[in-house]
Amino acid sequence: MSSPTRDQVANCVLAAIDTLNPQLESDRQIERSLTAKLFGREAPLDSLGLVNLIVTVEEQLSDDLDVTITLANEKAMSRRTSPFRSVDVLIDFILEMLSDEAKAAA
Image (cartoon, rainbow, N blue to C red; front, side):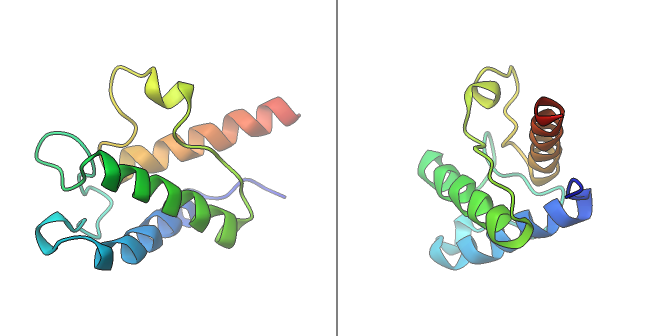
């Protein structure tokens, strides 16, 4: 199977936001935008909210694209800047992880 496109991954992340938002306080909901902040200063998610988002994104990727990925991994945690700070950065990180997995499997 070919690697998912950026649009496919973006749709999964946005669908995860749609799933998670009703569970969040109104002032903690995530903007449904590719540039929306997720975690960090002036971002809506606290650490528990971030964990919920990560799990929801992983489930969405599995359900929609048949992709199994662990986002909260050593690579993510060792970065100087968090791959979870905004939607577009998270999408880039997911694509990077999928690319790395594809190269390892080749």
